[in-house]
Image (cartoon, rainbow, N blue to C red; front, side):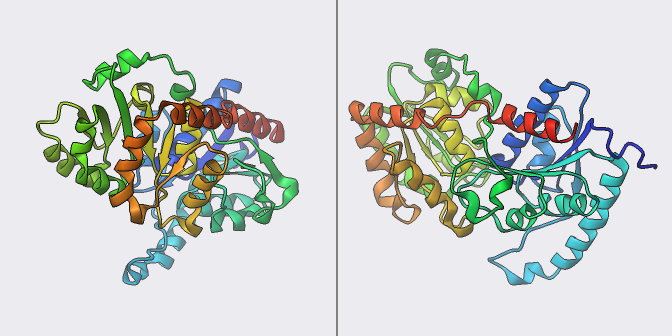
Length: 370
């Protein structure tokens, strides 16, 4: 195929995924690009077997999968095939990029970002990075040197990237969450719960959170005893166990995944969450009092860094994963009974909300590739 459409200006590749924290912002950016210029063609590139292969087509976009995996820190044996996968993925990327002929490539983090942006940079195609965390990932730092522009959520990112390339946009939040239309009453009823009762949403992110799930499981009775309802999103690995555990509790709704997260936020007075960048961005927009339990194995422990940013501004509470078993439920119940503290957290987290990050990113990209 000829590469005459190499810089048609209307074709854009978006690479990355792995978790909802990368996929949802990527879809938000794609939607904003389409809104700004409906003639744009967007192609996603993801890692085969990962969540993006399902979520991106659901959002109405085409995705091509490549064979790539990350370095497995827990089992060195599993890394034997890694160099071969990397080489194979580069050939796959070369074929996809050359056939599609993009005017730009955007990386949102996740395994497929590196080979796609690396190849685009080698071909002189403008590349853009969205770094959602307050601590940049290694591959993004490597790509940053040759990127056209790097979109970041917070200030102080000059330690990771060339200062001249940075643009602080905040993190793109799903449109359904920014444009919240559902009432608390409707939302509560959709989970079979009572809108008049104090409600806690517990979410470990798209893949679930073992430390949080075990802490809730161990103290499940405490919620009913204190007249508190629970929306408990467990992730797949814990779903069956949680479903069996909540039998007979009419104050608890549980499932592996929540399809309409906006309903869960609308029903909740308090949210228990990991402190991934995207979860935080959504909670700021939704103005929810939150108890953060950072994922302890995130690269450079960036989730703890993310959470402390908020705790320092009285915009959230923090419970360590290693202490969740003893402290999480008592912390949540105490907050549920303290309306003044809920109001303070609500006001402070709301001040940090950004609702137009996706538009800012789309505008900059379209300007750059005119």
